[in-house]
Amino acid sequence: MQKKPIAQLLRTGQPDETVTIQGWVRTKRELKEFAFMEVNDGSCLANLQVILNPDVPDYQTTLQRVNTGASVEVAGVLVPSPGKGQRIELRANSVQVYGEADPATYPLQKKRHSFEFLRTIGHLRSRTNTIGAVLRVRNACANAIHQFFQERGFLWIHSPIITASDCEGAGELFTVTNLNLNEIPKTEDQLVDFSQDFFGRQAYLTVSGQLQAEVMAMTFGNVYTFGPTFRAENSNTSRHLAEFWMVEPEMAFCDLQGDMDLAEEFLKYVFSSVLENCPEDMEFFNKRIDNSVLATADNIINNQFERITYTDAIAQLEKADRKFEYPVEWGTDLQSEHERYLAEELFQKPVIVSDYPVGIKAFYMRLNEDGKTVAAMDVLAPKIGEIIGGSQREERLDVLQQRIQNQGMNPEEFWWYLDLRRYGTVAHAGFGLGFERLVQFMTGMGNIRDVIPFPRTPLSAEF
Image (cartoon, rainbow, N blue to C red; front, side, top):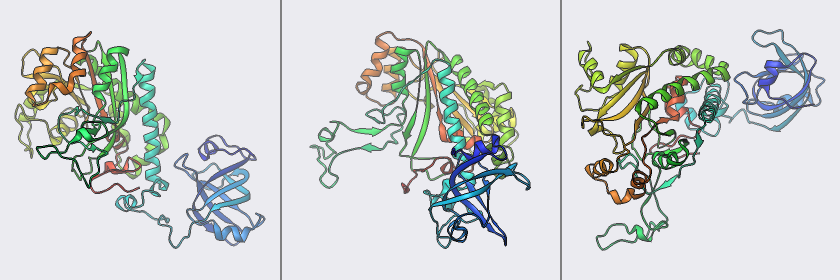
């Protein structure tokens, strides 16, 4: 008998088909003449109902062992299901229990558990309907991202996890060291002597693969990175993680307009792909988590994104018939409340804001001819605000050197990055997308810690 995933059986299994399934018991119900149990193998949201008749070998012993959480293998025959909501069920011929679960101590019983509680049992929470659905959507989303770029000839670049540069210049970095923390070597100035460390200099966990992606774009044209990044930002909120994944495409011979076009096409593609591949899970989120999940997806897929400049956005916010918590003034960064007003209330669809003031954006963004703004863009989406940030990069050597100095950074630390402007420089652009923020937006989940298998946050590195 061939083992098949439950998802496949529920879609295509036929009565009288002999099959074997493996999974974990979700529920068990004993009647006088027979018993039912529902088994889930993680391949889909739905369970497969299994009928246990007394003619199953070791029937009574099996009933005592197949409690919620137990792992089993069931061999039997598919039969039509008389109950609602399921076309077929499995009549067991044999049941093998691989691992029991004590019902007195197993923490996932048949009741609703808070997401806060589930985070305390991160080794088991993926067995719940909601987290299981999240992780299937996350998988489909990651697959769609790779498909999008691969279909367009982009090369996937594995950027380094350990780096000596701070791409964002914000200083929120985790230091990587091999020094003996009980006997830290010091310089004459009583600073840490990193020359004695493993790399001979101070090193960090990366906050972005962008700079390395720019290197590769100068060879391959179109590239993208997709991997973990780290921020030592002490923000204990529902929107922040210390470890998260970033998607960062980089395109040579590309300007800001091309960058915005790709970002819009990218979001539409990923949402469409997830809806196609995870329809049951997305329906679940729409029913149980946020009843606007499917409408939000439709809004992304079927609307042309609005495009305005930062200056125009400020003007619209100043005219808004409402009071914002944070003041609106040209030269200050847009806050989440401003972004959501533009996307949710004013335009009621995604908005791309471009040409931000030079003083609030990173050193690598191309300075516009007005000398006051840079060729940057943010994609703002209803319900979440900024979801993508990108820019045309500064390809002029002299301007880039000045920008680095203006931000108090040492140009010598970026010698290799500046070399890209010395040898075959070209206009290029790219953007960054926080993967967990995308999954959170897509599923309607309220806390970003619930869309990554093992969240890393301040004072929490469990599991």
